[in-house]
Length: 117
Image (tube, rainbow, N blue to C red; front, side):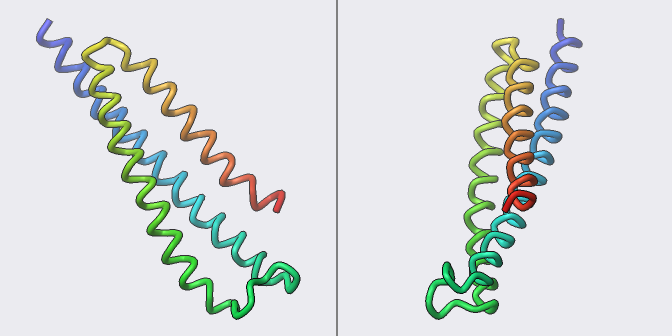
């Protein structure tokens, strides 16, 4: 029983690490997509806010890193909490699948938006 518990906790650590890396990739792609959309906004004279130029992308980039980084931190802390709870409730695989599906959908959305933008 003790050996199985050690393997489960090692699996929890590995799953958390992999999901965290997937969240990093999804958030980075969301940042790139935000910059792409801001570039489209600035390039279009009809939609461009007054006073904005390509130099405005620096501020957009900094704000984007702050917002997406905060979302990443909140997501990782929430995942850690839910995964730790699911280990004790014997639902680690189910919870892992849910988180992986949501993160994959976010990554796919952030990746596909520039293709249709």
